[in-house]
Image (tube, rainbow, N blue to C red):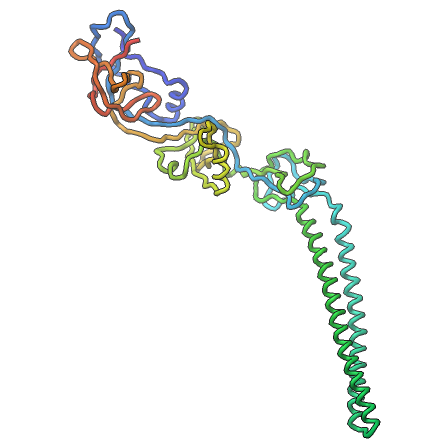
Amino acid sequence: MKRYLKRSCAVVLSVLMAASIPGCSTKDTKEDIPALMEPQNLEVTTVKVERADVRVYKVETTRVEPKGEEVYFAMDGTVEQVFVQQGQYVEKGTLLAQLSAEEYEEKIPQTEKEIEDLLKAYDKENAKAAKQAKEIEDKIARLKREVRSSGGDLRNQKRTELEIAQIEQERFNVDNEIRIQNHQNREAKLREKLAELEEMETSSKLYSPYDGYVLNQPLNLIGQRFHEEDAAFVIYDASQLYVTADYYSEARFEKMHEHYALIDGEKVELEFVELTEEQLKQLSVKSTPGSSVSKRVQYRLALKEGQTVNFGDYALVIFVTDSREDVLTLPTDLVSYDGFGYHVYKYEDGVRKQVEIIPGLRDNCRIEIISGLEEGDVVYAQH
């Protein structure tokens, strides 16, 4: 009769042992297990019911990723200059690249000159208008005096001249207002044009949104035509690292017993990254009902003091979705189901007995025994 042989859980067992997750191994006990009297010609594995932890988990292999942000030009254009290199560390506000300046570099000084000339002409027109207005005012004042000092037909003549002068003044005032309004409109249009050109000059320059490293190869951008919706650069922040795994809602994530990444044998806790409504909408598009495509999202690595993780490191992402501690367990392959219920073969009083059990939580290696067996009972399987 062979003694209890440990069962291997393949790669997952080694991973979980490295991560200090119990549940896939049994105690290597020295206690004697009674030899079975039957069957006679089959290989038999025996094991005792023992207490252990049962943990339901999901393991995914991935790599450490930095926080990457796509950077866009604020206008369409062709890249003329690039000021950074791949892998270069840049601070927030660093000039990354610039579009061709053909559309504005000559027009800006031209427009500035037009505004300057317009203002000079306006000053001359104002001086001329002020002189003309003063002449009309003086004429009206003179005629008013002459009307008061004259009499008879001469007074009537001076009154007529005064009325004509006042009409002339009103016409002048209307014409002057139109002249001022036309000037203001011309100046406003030129300044609007200048503002647009200056905005183009600003928009043609691309700056880093935060401190980080240039991820893509910038030199390949020179001569390329970009639209506003085209990402030109990717800048990543090495201080914020992530791993990509299947999507869980925040409520489901928080209810998990554990969630962490195993990197170089060291556990690194995970933090949930809240998604926008648009991002959640995109996830639903990528994983429609009935589709086998999983939703993939990033989880932030919550590094503790002294922990060092690098971009590109391999990681095992482990989600412990359920757990039972210190419960009666057996290896999962010793439990059978016959359509009516679950049972095992138990050794008792020198004979084998089929015993009905009620199973509980199960993981990749062990199953919880809720009832039907006691701790220390000997169960065997035939091979």
